[in-house]
Length: 576
Image (cartoon, rainbow, N blue to C red; front, side, top):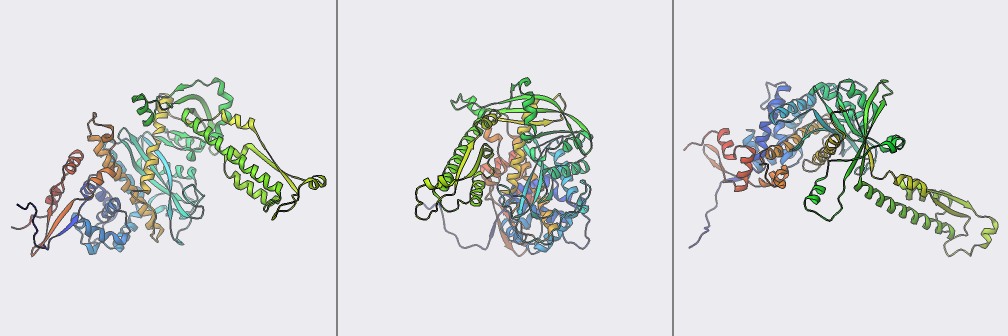
């Protein structure tokens, strides 16, 4: 007997609802559409509110990063037009662009409104925020983008022009001639991971000091925290940053440039009392649990009371400097130094041989260029000195005849290696420093553990650029560009909220992998979920299909309605 039969062709259509089965409920629970509409005036002539249009764009970016002109095609393939009750032909880039223009006028306020709602709805504390800026690369001329005029750092919404899209300093992952802006994200972290809750932008040629000052001013204006510990990396550190927080009764925890605190460390090195830190990386915990023979690395901490003076305000800020020693960093630094010293030494020896043989590009100007290229930005270059010594007539006469293509040498290249300086630096290997104004009730060990959660902020920046693909950006208007960047910050919040809801529902005895389930994994579970669409004389009839066991399990964990329940409440019942 046949178990599978061939049937006639059907006129029924299908669409892949896919990730929208999760994205629609999470955006609803975040009240994205209603919060946007609360801040933007209603246009009596508009068919659809800005909240509905922008939440649709958010869903499109979350499920499949696409250009504005392709949103309609995406909606047709996924059935988004059914959930958002918006005809496909109405999803044009002009409508989306107008909503972005309106969003730009209230971008900071909307972002803050969603942050405050998310904090209440999902039991997320905002008293401790990790801040980390990143850059967003742009393509195109952007001739309409101009520098922001000078103004107070708390200027926001319509009063704050779009960040200047311009050439910034060269970075490891961005060439020196590309145009960019910097986007800063504030991330709240607890045992369920991090959630980006607020952010801002600064011009592409501004640094971390400007960025953190503007972000703090916006935090005060829009989130109005009663307590705050702001955690950030060394690019944002300054005495002025600590002074601003201290003046408001808030606290800072920053890593600091080592060279700024090296002399302080050496002055007190013998008096420092070191204690092993309680923090261990996930890998190090695994090694200890498994009794692994692999190296067991650890951190040691030493605390020094100190005072910093903000030159601008004249304020003296009492603080603690937490010196950190890492056995793993010590090994890596020493291996790196050894390799770098060997490479520089070999390069200099090769250059000396070239000069001695009278080869091409061994004149003084060429030698200087070659040494500069060899040294680059390597810190180990400070251990080497070199000089070109002119040869006397007698020395020239003793030289053998030059080989073919060479000329009789006129100089001798000499270099020296300062082993004492290298040894002095080696004594500092593995040591870094943090500065904090946090209350003394928070121990150095606890503060260091909290600082190590900064990787959640770095991960959020990574997610901002990869699954959400915030760049490359091709919009022409700087205002629309900035509006899209801020909208993507809301998308990033939704991305992290989805995994947070799941992790909160996972039993404590569940395997670690289940407890660390990510949004990427959840959306992949719903990469395929089909709706059958039947065309009748009454109109379209949408038929949900059966969920897989895993899909139903995910929805139960999240506490979300099934697609069938959503559609049943969203659409009128089909006539018999």
